[in-house]
Length: 206
Image (cartoon, rainbow, N blue to C red):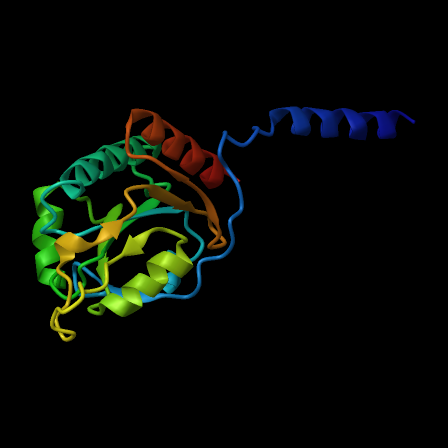
């Protein structure tokens, strides 16, 4: 009888210690296998991120309007993730910024952009596929995020491609767990950063 009571008490203590998931955490499905080229010319994708918590967003280096604020917010997220790791320990999560102008944003271009925003290669990576159609499929279907280029206007040269400036893309952070499941999306404002960090901490502790 005493043994049973002890087991029940231990279970109660463990249950009480288990943190409740932060608001907005969900399971939105698995990201399909993917692979791109990082700013250092090495592969980055499902294989390299397997077993890690990571955050992905979407931008392009020549974007004059929405991407610079997103890059600055990502730099803030990087610093907050860096601060969560005990001294001498690896970061608890990774960040990947996927270019939605992959034909322009070569690894060399991304490397310069990474340096401009102080990207720490232990945490923040940049990725390009070199092909817009492949990127659109991954972003839209794989990460369930907006990526749209309008069709050419009537009478336009059918061979003409819309420019990157015409691209409408998500400005949110998408958080992925160790098993490759999408666990939520959050904005780049202060409240969104707080929620993203809370989600990362929760998933890293599981």
